[in-house]
Structures are given as C-alpha cells and as structure tokens.
Image 1 (cartoon, rainbow, N blue to C red):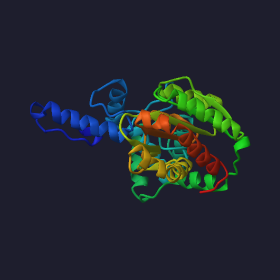
Image 2: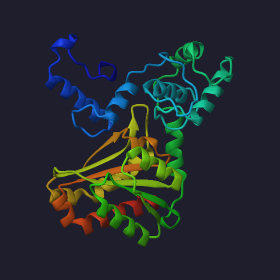
Image 3: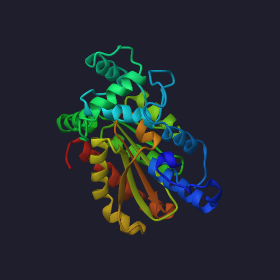
Amino acid sequence: MSAAGHQLSADPGRSTPAAIEAALCAFQRDRGLPVSGTCDDPTWHALVEAGWRLGDRVLTLTAPNQRGDDVADLQARLHRLGFDCGRVDGIFGAETAVALHDFQRNCGLLVDGVCGAATVRSLVRVSSQSGDGPGVALVRERDRYQRETRSMAASRIAVATSGTAGQLARDLGRSLRRHGASVAVLDELDPSAQAAAANRFSADLVICVDMVREPNVVLHHYGVPAFESVAGRALVDGLRSALGELAGELGAGEVSASAQRHPLLRETRMPAVRCQLGPPAAVALHSPRVIDQITHAIVDWTSGRP
C-alpha cells in the first residue's frame, strides 16, 4: 500500500495486523470505498490501480479501458497543457485518446495514440513548465455549469441505492417526478452497474441515497486532486444547507461533505452525489422531511439557485 501513499513498516515482518488494517482503512477512505479494513474485490482493484505510475506501462485506448493512477497523471498533465480529455478519472477512454493524439501532433511526435516512452518523456518535459493550475477540464467544467440553463421539466434524474434505502429511493423518485423530472430508480446494487445504467439513461444527475448504522449525514461528489465535479459540488453545497437542521435531529450534529472517487461518482458521465444517512430508525421516522429537503435542494440546483 506504500504506492498508494499509506505506509506500512519498512520491514514487512513488523507490520502488525492492526497496522495493516489501519492502513487499509485509510486507503479505502481515501478512495471512497466502504471502510471495512478487509481487502475485498473493489479494494484489491483500487490497490492495483494505485500501483501504476506514468511510464510503468504503455497506455492506449483498449476495450476494456485501461485504469490506474498513471492514466490519471496523464490526464492531469494533458489538462494543464490545454488538451481536454474530460474529467480526470483514471480511465483511458475516447476523450483521453483524442487529447493524446492532439498532444502528439503539437509536439511533432508519431501520432499513434500510444503513450509510450517517447510520449512520456515529452509530456514530462513540457508539463514541468506548465505550473500546477486546475487545467482546461476544470475551467470548462466551471464555465459549463455557470452557463447551462436547467429546469426540472427537462431534467432526467437517476436515483440509486446500495440496497439499504430502497424505500427511501423509491419515495424520492416519486417526489422528483411530481416536480416534473423524468426519473429512473436504478435496480442495480453494484456501483459500476449503477453508473452504466445512468449513462444509458442519459441522466442529467445521479443521486444515491444510502442508510448507515451510525448517526450521520454524509455527502460526497466526485473529486481528485487535479479535478472535481463543479456541478456535483454545487449540489452537495445545497444539500448540506437543506439537511443541516435535520442532521441534529438524526443525532449527527452536522452534515459532513467531501470529494471522493467512489465508482458511481467516477464512472458516470453526469454529476453524481452520494447521500449517506443514519441511523435507519431515525431516518425512517423523518423520511418525509428527508425526501422533501433533498427534493427541494435538487429543484434549486436545477434552477441554478444556490
């Protein structure tokens, strides 16, 4: 896990089970995974991705797409140089391939869409002079959000849950429909499957509601050091305000919010927000208010109101 920034002892034999579990929990927390302290399949895949550094392997457009921190580094460097490859998500998709072609063409390299040794050398050399600003993708994301006109009547919203809040998700879907939105309540429980379903639905927004055991109101939007979903962050801010008073009644005290790279947030092509609420008994008791507050935050978000 040292490649992911979570250090264990330099001597593997001295890494205690408690230290390994703590490092694994810290890694899961950082990657927006369920914090279990066990290395399940999603955690293992995330660990593999975190182990790649730019130049370790040849990057190009494949099916399925290559994923890893090396891809995210490539995307961030291209963005700072003005080559837009969409969000920095660590997934080598079509937009990244187009941006890489453009970079190679501008640098007089072989335009083959393959990020090999020569392309990496040029990219590192040129990007070392570009500073550490947000890059073209984030600038365009902000501009798009500020210019975009939205309304509930024209909105397509996907509502998801991990299965712990099925009734809440269905009730929220009905509430959003009453306000004019076209709504799909997703049946899939796997976050990657949810993202794929939302993309097929061509949603304008994904809202995921889940219940947790502890008193909590926790909100997440997609974000990594080099990029964040501006529209997702705006909705989180609105939800944070709308659910503030309710958090106290649930025993949470306050609403917490952070950027994460959870698969649902990462793999959707539209803004996505996760809302975790607990404990279940208290959420069920206040369910009408929870749905009302979330709905009105989304209505305000679609109209461009803060």
